[in-house]
Structure formats: structure tokens, C-alpha cells
Image (cartoon, rainbow, N blue to C red; front, top):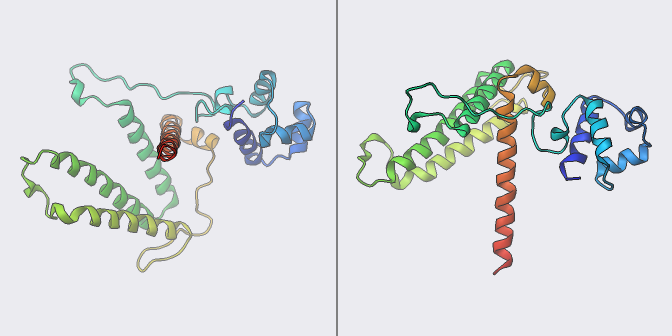
Length: 233
């Protein structure tokens, strides 16, 4: 099996508020065996994978971590209208980002907290600004008059603004006020799960799940690469 399977079947059971005993009885296995599967102590056969996928109403690919969408859907490559140049076409990565940002702003809107929305916007604006300025400044012949803040001091200020926005957002999500910024009201935090996201955002959730999958894969590969490099020293 793999490392995703134990985590996902445990998550699915807890999301539904089910006990190990009741699930084990429904699946025709002992509670001890199910516990071993959930802890990754023992590996199950393919028949059990299919059985537990049917029990929770999800795909086998989802249980195995091959997709973040419970139904096993993948993110389709967007079809571009005729007449648009290759350079202007939306890449799969851009499609994923657009859908995910739309989902995030929808969730923020459901929270009804303008302060949180503003902090998220500040963070995203700074991140996009940083990337664009790096691209713009890669050619020293491009006139720097477009920007009001000097190149030699912008990096530190961008990092500070990003960190401040994330720090403020963290406090607001805990319901704490920060001066004129109002914390999230009690009981208004979004109740989320992969299934709830798929139901609420049927046209957007696949992109969100794909972003999570790709980002975590990139993080793990970076860590593994750093560890390998370190071991060579």
C-alpha cells in the first residue's frame, strides 16, 4: 500500500463520526485489523481497498492519494478559444491558480469578515507584485520608473508585508481583534472536508485538490533533495 491510505481512511471515518468498531463490522473485519490498517501497521489487499472505497463512496484513486478529489476526478486541461496566441493561452497551472483563488475568496465571503479578506488580498497582491517586479527587472534596460520603491530596499519590505499579512490573518482566524481589524466571529469558521468542498464547488474543487497535491509533492521533493545534498557534504 502507501502512506496516504492509512491517513485517508482514518480521516474519512472521523469526518463521519464513526467508531472503528462500527466500520469494522460493516466491512466484515475485526476492529484490531482495521486499526492496523489505519495506523499503517499492516497492508490490505486490493479487495479491501475496493470495499472501503464503496463504503465511503469515494474512488480507489482518492484512497491511494492519486487524486485529491473524492470522486477521482482530475483537472481537465482548459480548452482555448480559436485565434488566441500560444503565449496568451491559459496554462494548466494558471487554471489551477485561478480556480483556487476563486474558491478561497468564496470561503472568505461566507465567513463575512472583511478584515480577513483584506489581509488575504494584501498577501496575494504582494506576492504577485514581487513576481512581476522580478520578471520586469530581469532586463536591466527596462525603465525602473514604473516602481516608486527603490530596487535595493524592496525585497525586505515585501517580506515584511507578507509576514505581517499572514500574522494578522492568523490572529483574526482565532477570533482576536487587532486594532480596527475584527476577528472571526465565533461559530462562523468554515466547516470543510474534501467531500464538502467537492459538493460546494463542483467546478472548482478539482483545481484546489490538484494544487494541494502538487504543492505537497514539490515540498517533499525539495526536502528530499536538500537532505541528499547535505549527506554528500
